[in-house]
Image 1 (cartoon, rainbow, N blue to C red):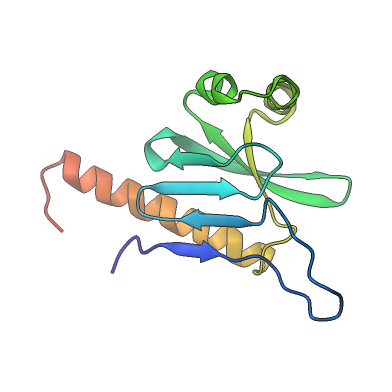
Image 2 (image 1 turned 90 degrees about the horizontal axis):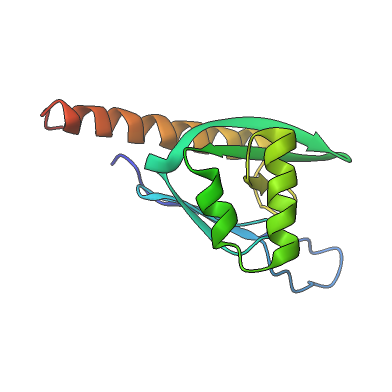
Length: 136
């Protein structure tokens, strides 16, 4: 079935005691991405807002940056002044105010990237078919 939800669960490492992590979950659904893997507030990004993805590495940490149509709206939704400022800096450096960190997710970098690209392509295909009046 197209556009099934994908939950990317927190990473569990049995070699050390589990720590509580606040930002460890992303859900990729037919509606969009619920990103809770970064230090910003939990963010829902509908597929309709997404333009593309790019990859960035900062201090040996890799991120998928999500480029959106209306970055100012996402910045303005953030209530915390410092986080809003960081989002502006990210936008200046990476053209993105939203990123998904691979750290803490229980999947490989390639799996995360493949799921994001696949679901985005499925959304675009389904949306194009609906706009053309084609029923799938």
